[in-house]
Amino acid sequence: GAMAQSQARSNAITFSAALSACEKGGEWEKAMQLFRFMAQQRVELDLTIFGTAINACRRGGRWEDALQLLSMMSKRFLESNTIIISAAISSCERGGELERALKLFSMAVQSKVESNKIMFSAAISACEKGGEWKKALTLFNAMSQKQLEPDTVSCNAAISACEKAG
Image (cartoon, rainbow, N blue to C red; front, side, top):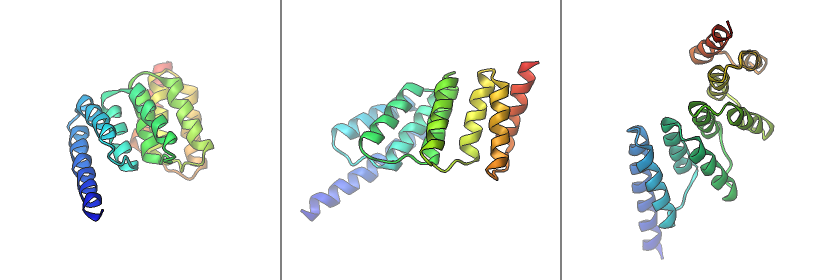
């Protein structure tokens, strides 16, 4: 009844707070253990919980886990948002997975996820790390076409990509 629903809601809030603490503390392994435990306990996994777990993966450079979480989200018919996609792109970037990062970026743009500076910056940073200066500049120019003003992160990544090219 109502008491069981209230208990389930408070459990979800408690678990979500613990997951967030793990993520903010850079404890991606603990965050993923907690996420799996939450799923086993049938805690309702919402966008916030998935986003926090994917952000923990980003901090740990755990692109495989981030992509697995994105896949789980789509199986649950949860639509990704810009923040979640950006964190997944950054996970791939940190893991040196340029092609996966760019594929995620393309899929997000095609699926009409609203692209923003953070998402572009993550993709440009992935190009910079992957030595793809032309792709970095193409993305940098695309920001202007979308009326997105480049920020320090995207500017530095684009400049660094060009520097690495010689």
